[in-house]
Length: 256
Length: 245
Ligand SMILES: Nc1ncnc2c1ncn2[C@@H]1O[C@H](COP(=O)(O)OP(=O)(O)O)[C@@H](O)[C@H]1O
Ligand SMILES: [Mg+2]
Image (cartoon, rainbow over all chains, first blue to last red; front, side, top):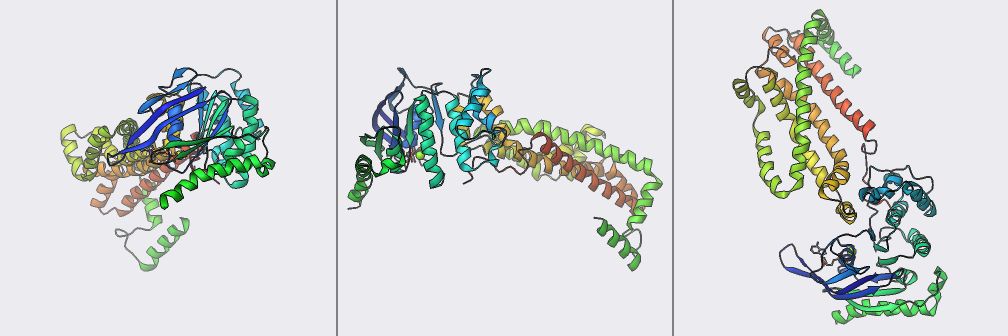
């Protein structure tokens, strides 16, 4: 579904010096696959997502989506940001339908589909509320519904639960899996949380900073549907400790 | 408010302050009532200037602000000019305009506009540029063009800022109209203040000041009410871009 081929991305820093955000990154994501990306801040995770989204062009290499090179934002992709980024003036329902309205892709059923989606996300009855009347967790649910309503084949999520408290976060990750299982689009999910990455993903991509590179890709061999009980399993520990070794081992090596 | 007037009335009588220095509210009231058709004419003349000047500020400021927000180059070219218009004292400018354009309504509207438009431009530009980058990126991810981005994202986001500017501009329009009338007018509350003071008819001058204050308050309240009715999410809006935990 997504093929990232030897991508380099260099930004001009504020002082004019080049910042190498991504260096020779290659990755393939099959359709319906859930891939998590972990790594320290500044290692180019957001840049990678924005490349796939077609929001920034690569300096070198290319991103191919459904057989066509990505040169601009595409209808097949939808994005969820760390902040809910809802329109403060629009109610929940109009926020969820906003992308489709912007792209003139609404149908007579759009509103009903939006209501149904909101209901599965536990937001029935909140359609007419303004974003500021909702909690952070509910706002982020709205943002996820907004992305899902576009029926994307590729869902890009940039630390979507990063601003939420730990309890809401756990609840939302299982909810996300439920929504994903019903639709089965490819997901690229950036997170800071190693357990979250392992719990959610089929594969976890570990990145390292300066320049941003892929240091390892770990297959998570846990049966689905996933649950928090699996956090006690051997496979879960194998995956988390291998990721930790990459992230913290490197730091120790550099400190030495 | 009523208490203030009561204290005012009482002190004038208690300390025997003479009327041409500080008239009592009752004296102001009777002076107004005595010639109320004239006062009404002056009030309507000023209101016309205020509304036309305020209208001109809105019509010119909003497109101007969009232009400034659209590109740093345009902003760099226009902003210094705007600041210059703000540093020139309008009292000095008014006579020049009257000589150039004649003693009619036009120079008064221009002076009113010049006094009122700046905060509106600054507020609107601030609003257009305050749109969170994620919201802009969301628009881009939905393949919105520049125009769509402006109309569907930036402008609505700027609404609370625009209304902040509108409220200041409403109050300043009254100031601007009076400044213009002081310099060149044969009607209006500014003119009434000047002619009354020339004949030591202080109560009438005070009457004009009170009417001006009421006009300013009403205009401000009208703008605030429009905001509440048309954009209920705006008044006191805490933008959703900052996630509430
Ligand atoms: N638009 C940009 N201009 C300049 N530098 C950027 C830009 N975007 C990202 N960078 C730089 O690229 C590197 C990677 O950033 P990012 O992709 O945001 O990392 P992450 O999401 O993993 O924290 C950082 O050093 C950052 O400063
Ligand atoms: Mg990031």
